[in-house]
Image 1: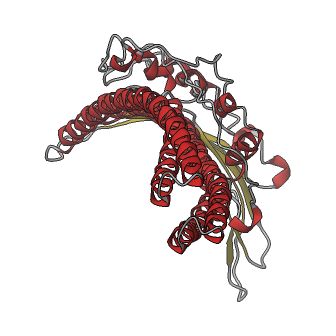
Image 2: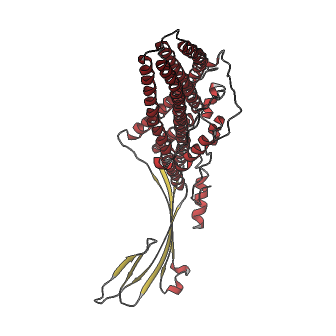
Image 3: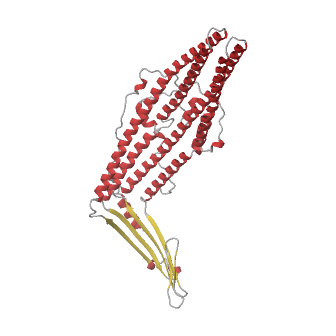
Length: 489
């Protein structure tokens, strides 16, 4: 066994080469700057995001409470966590091939005649045990060592591929978390927009009731017809119906948020609150930063290394598979003298296996591995292009919506003054009530439009943060995949 150990060391000294291409990250599409930033000054810049809690820029305790449930209870995230653990196990499985396999077998055999026959049982270690009722026994214990020498780097390339695969799973997990968090934030602001709409309609109903009392007083005083009163009543009742309908959509958003946090809808209740008035805008930085800040780009890049290493695994099939084996055994009787030198047997062996003809199978598998790698390169570059597009889309949405919000605010202010002036004119009898109805309807429409723009701005800000990767960075990927195997160096 000592001789075998030295032989293994000698063989390992020549086992340093690895066939197949070494990985080098291909070039990705790039841009000097985002077009949408040209000539646009960010109106409300914020400090750097807290790492892992990008939603803190909204300063909303309820949103913070809900977001923190995603990591703990979201079932989609749990699925990706399990996939990552499976990828880590595959790394340990591949690394195990770098080490020798050691086995031991122990047995005792009793020989003799008689009618009792012979029984055979197998021990958990793989040894066999046979016995009969007769006297006389022979004992044996043997150890075996086999080692598939990774002369051409096939196993090491597989470890490299599986390690990159585990990093892909880690990035996919981060991307799943980011997606769930962004979806929750979007649903949350949509819910708050429903709260704001309910408050707007409640205020409008109160205003219409005041206008109804005016028409009622005018009718009783004989200065207006009953048509004004009926028209004002119909307008009030129609708006009250709109107010009731708001609750349907709000409950759906609340149920969606509950599921995102991993809870049944009955367990999550969100109290009404105003929609945020401020829209934080995160400076996007340089386009090249996206390569380090987006988990989906990191996953696509790690996928390239995973596929590149598999080219080496397939290329190694061209070369012979070299392995060492050793057997050491003690066999004899009685048991007390089993380990005497006279009872010792041993053997050492080395083998090499090479396929001489397989109909082009090896070249086909290498070509397939290269094609898969080329596909992963294209996927990586397309992922980068999509990231640039998403950031540009979010920036343009924020820029245009900011301009629209200013225009809507002016329109609401002007229409509100028109409503007040028209209602006063109606009181003194200089205009018909239809003029009041027209201005009130226009005011409600402008107010709803302003609310929708504010809702869209908040959702667009979430989209920008998601497009920028949230608070994530490629440095968060595990460089060394920890496994449970005690033999892993």
